[in-house]
Image (tube, rainbow, N blue to C red; front, side, top):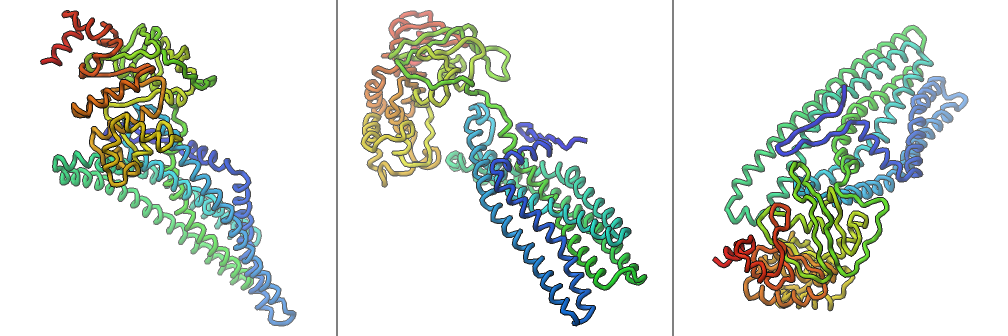
Length: 594
């Protein structure tokens, strides 16, 4: 029977790994720092062996006391007992001093790598994934690693070693007692593993899935708080979240109940072992086959084993719970990126900004009909080209392929003669400045947002870029000026203010290729006129691509490409296209003019 399970929520089917895959991921994390791992495991092993000697030292002490004060053997026995106990605590302390730097460093590494991996997933992946759920999975996985490591190294492994060791010691002295102890322990370990894997895990995965949905719902509602308030929908959002929270509660209650039920099995097994061992020991003593010290040693051994057994059952369940929680990070590690750097990729070498689509074929994932077929277009260096056409005609896809946010299925996209698939993505995109229709800013200062494309820019350069984008005046009116924090996604600024900050950011980036996606759509007429004048200076000498629905913003373009169903059906200047009464552009211009 496989322990791989799939859970389906309202929007997607989550991938679930089996325990072997998760443990392999954990092993790769452990292998990062082999010397610390060896020290941690080595000292735990020494502590475990030392703990096995404690019952023997206790038995020796009892026998020495029973023999009387003659010979002073009791002092030697006492020193041996204290020495063994001291060694046990010393080894545990040394192991912990290895574990602290080991786990903290690994937790930082795996969290950083998960973040790095998620950043490089495609825009489609992010569009179909709740940001809050991703955050929840990463933070939950980080703490699950800590819990998993602690329970395996300090719990499960020592517990098995102690139980086997104690059973072996008892078997050497009393074979029948050792055999009974070994049988009960084997039944206990087997039942604990089976209950965790087949009884607890399926339900635990269901509650984890809803826990991730809670994170997603929180981020979705808080991120859209302006819309919630605009429609007075707080009560409706309360009810929606209440329903989700109580769905989670129902699944979590079932999970926790299964934990309690499995503990009951452990308790019954523990009581059975206690009754069997105590009865056997009393029987051995009554026959004279065991001394008082033997009985004390065996009872001490039993108490140690019993405590380990109780903890073992709980630790196995915690290990399973942690593996279910950390598996999201393992999935991130295993997931292939949609757009990968070529093994022989080199840095992009910016030149004059020539762009050429050479017989490009492109189909979006999940769609049967290609958007582009044998599509060829060339844009000269320094040329200002506007893209127009109805929604879904291929304008935005053109820009995304220039940025290599997707890979073409056929043909090639060349920038300055370099195939974009054979250069590093980050080096390519650093040479393409983008001003989107709805710019998202970071919750950082305005200066940091403007300098994002040129992080080593001076404050003077930031201010000059803001002036060129006609943003300096409104920035200086803010309480902290350029040091003002803009809020999450820039919510503390108006749409027009965000747009001007984004334009300033593109100006400062000083890239040879400039993409303006309705870059002035959020500006009032007066500000739009000022910014258009500023943008003319910025576009000079740069290859510029403008996506526009408002045709008034592209009248001065060197060339206008009219898209329809993934093809360029018309191209020319505004005057040339407007003169063709039967053309699509003339119809769009007529509609724009009312």
